[in-house]
Image: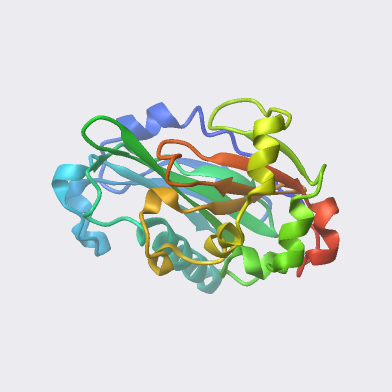
Length: 252
């Protein structure tokens, strides 16, 4: 199986937010050769997991882990997943709402998810997002430059008409590119691609300005953010058939 499967998280939210058991699984999702379980971290059990988050700024945090019969592989993937999901959270945040990981792709090839935190400040909230993609053959996290050639030629390709096929915003249907969005595409700076090729600790600016990426069946999605987009991101959806000559891996 080389494609991806979708997981609709909408039905999970109430169960997760009402689950008050320390670090317990709320739901398990089966895939082709592993299952995905959702767990909750609460202030009272954070220290067990080695986290020094301040109690005052979170009520709960949801993260995922996999289950599979191969113990060595399971341990390696879960360590990679956990680190990726918590390493970008620190005590500089104000107070944030629970984040439900949004599973974008789960197959024997890739596990890709979008994690999100709404950091509540005095008169608004900052939406901080981080895409996480795990190669389910190696158990390692992959970045944009592991999947495609990140260079000026690639940037020029995705700016061509018809390569970015649509744009979507959180919880809304896809929209065709209008003139304003075409301008956004034409002005897309290369450092957006560089941001998608690095982990959060390597990013030295405000987290709510960091762009990120994830994969879906036959698509590469870039979550584009700038300093003016503090509570949303533009999702540029790229058909991988249009960038096939830049791929470092087989199409997914």
